[in-house]
Every structure is written in C-alpha cells, then in structure tokens.
Amino acid sequence: MKMPAIDLAVAGSQREIAAIQRFRYDVLIEAQGGESVDADRQHRIVADPMDAAAQHLHVRTITGAIAAAVRLIPAAIDVLPPAYADALKLGSFLNFGRQAAAVQDRLVVGEASAAGIMATLLGGAVRGARRIGARFLCTAIPASQIRLFEQLGYRTYAEGFIDRDDHYLVPM
Image (cartoon, rainbow, N blue to C red; front, side, top):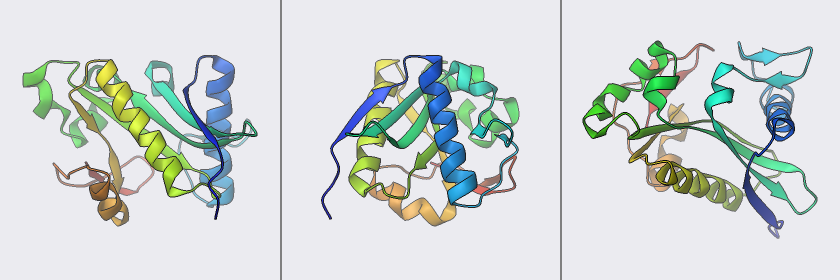
C-alpha cells in the first residue's frame, strides 16, 4: 500500500482546532463507536477545557483531510485537573522544574492512516515538547498499546488508573 503524502502542522487558529475536535468525534465516537464525557453530540466534537492551553498537532494528507491528531499540553502540572496530574504522577518531575513535564493526549489516528503517519505525529509531539522546554513527555494509554508505545521509545513509570470515561490507562 502506497503511503499518502502528509503534512505535519500545529493548529494556528480556532478554526483548525475546531476541525481537530470534529475529527476526534468522527473517529472516536462515530467510526469506533466509543463514548466520552467530553463528546458533544449536538456539535459533533470531542473537546474539554484543556484544549485552550494545548498545542494541537495534526497530520493532513495531500488532499487536506486530517489523518491524525494529538494534543500537547505544556507545563502540564499547572494545567491538568489535579486528579489527572496525580494519576500521571507529574509531581515526580517537579525536581526538574514546573515546565519539565508536558503531556500528550487525545491521540487520534483515522482509519485509513498508516503507521508512518503516527510516527510523524508523535515525532512532532516530541520536538514540540522539547521546544517548550519539557524534558519529559508523558501520556496515558490503554494497556493493549503498551508494546506499541515501547517500540516508539516510551516507558511505563507509574501504576495504571481509571479515567473519566471509565477506561483503564497506563502512564508512559
């Protein structure tokens, strides 16, 4: 299968962020049949207050369609709800400064996307975290994806937890 031409970018406008929020809904809710407390069925978006503090990286195909997206939250310990920051054990990184830990979440890869697109997107998240001064890029993933994320260079550093959508996630 030939890989489509892709373009990695950071959303630069509210319009682009809204398109990413609609993409999240289309993939997570419609295509995958998922549920989320952050899904707005009327507006067909998945969004929450942390979107305002985040950088929204996305990959577009040559046709301009969003193929994948991830959210990068700088200085995460100051932005995330305390229960989420505690679940990710972000306090463990405070010896390195408040800016040391960024969080990537809301990773969404469309059905037609290839592994190369995911690598491009996550590579962009790592570079973005470094640009904002983060020394650690944390995420929380379903246990079924641990091996994949280990292959991408992530390591488990804390016990798993149940998120607001009743999913068991493992901090990496």
